[in-house]
Amino acid sequence: MRIVRIALSLFILISLNAARTATQPATEKAWTESAEPFHIVGPIYYVGTRGLGIYLITTPAGHILLNGGMSGSAPLIEASIRKLGYKSEEIKILLISHAHMDHVGTLSDIKKLTGGQVEVISAEVELLESGGATDYLFAKDPKMHFAGVRADHVLKDGDTVSLGGVQLTARLTPGHTRGTTTWMTTVEDAGRSYVVVFPDGTTVNAGTHLVRNPSYPGITADYRRTLAFLATLHPDIYLAYHSEFFDPTGKRERAASEGVKAWVDPNGYARWIAEQTANFEKLVAQETAGESPHSAPQATKR
Image 1 (tube, rainbow, N blue to C red):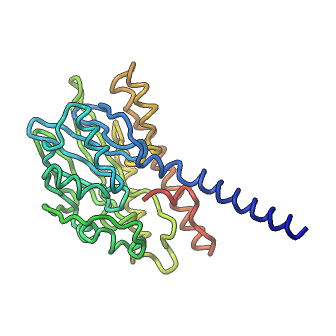
Image 2 (image 1 turned 120 degrees about the vertical axis):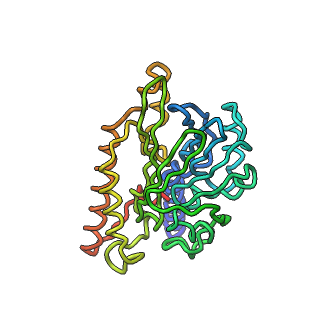
């Protein structure tokens, strides 16, 4: 009987580990899986992986690349750019949303490849240069570190980045990191203008402390300001950095028959921000009550 109990215990342990492996990283696995690049609106193209949004913005004067991916996936991004008929060496400006490994792990390689100028909001400069070593949450986790990159140009909240007739505005939306940045632009397609927002700063990674011994002073107020600001925006099109936030697959399929109209989703944006705000306030309430505040879905958003 003792042997049977041991065998049963081992079976249960193996089954639980298998279940964790199966459920844990459907999303994280998608971060390094190749995806077909495609046009979205005007000069904006998707060149990311299946799970991570990375955007090429083309202009006659060269191109802008917004965000990167996991370390080692730079060849996937370059292949997507070339598949669209553009050259990576024509990228002049490199922008980021925030300096976490899943969004800037490729930045050093892409900078070497393109020679593009890295433009970063001031509150994120130190974190980017440190390769994650100064992160309030991941500083002591080497798996979350990346090759540090020095900013060529330092921006402040409200600054604009312009190239070849395209202008993007940087808005500081901190909390997720101290310098998390939301980018905004207006582009034209077939004679119509579209307000496009690349929102960031809505999620709380597992392990973050908001109320008791906060991860950094003022983090809760930062998150609330960020979510309140994002709620004031009314984009025609919103393009996030994690695919589950805005359904790029479904919208792309509809775009085959509907064109740009498939990407226009102001109501979807408003719902998403409302959901993210409710999720945040739930975490604050749970932590205030002394409960474990972090749910599994939040844990995968870096």
